[in-house]
Length: 177
Image (cartoon, rainbow, N blue to C red; front, side, top):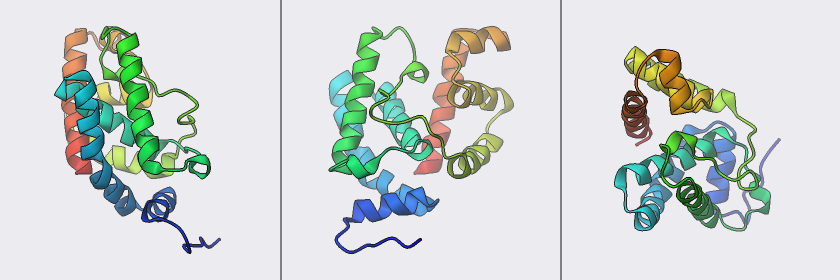
């Protein structure tokens, strides 16, 4: 099936390429929008580490979820709505948990996963991480377990789980850059 590029914006072309598995297209979108979204989030929550995690989560969800871009007038606006919703969710939870519990509202991103696109990337990054960090990341990000559940399962403290997630997020972010 061919894609008609006539009259399409650069973002639309990159999104289509990304949906077809082109990681270069994803990287271009990330480099184009991540700095502005990060500034926006940092301006709202004043916490650089949480802001970086939020931005990473947004882009990871973009890569792993199948959002309906046909109804989105502007990809840039969609990203900022995702960022705003992430921050609202954090504020509603009164900062009681780390970023791994934050959920984007279902009307923004569906939960349909593209395992053929995301899993090879995650597998490559996870292979390079220490075993415990990789396991914590897998349990949190892939299986959706809370920090408390992971701590109980692995016999480590919640703070240790949070630190592993922080370090794993940095490694994933470095890989994406």
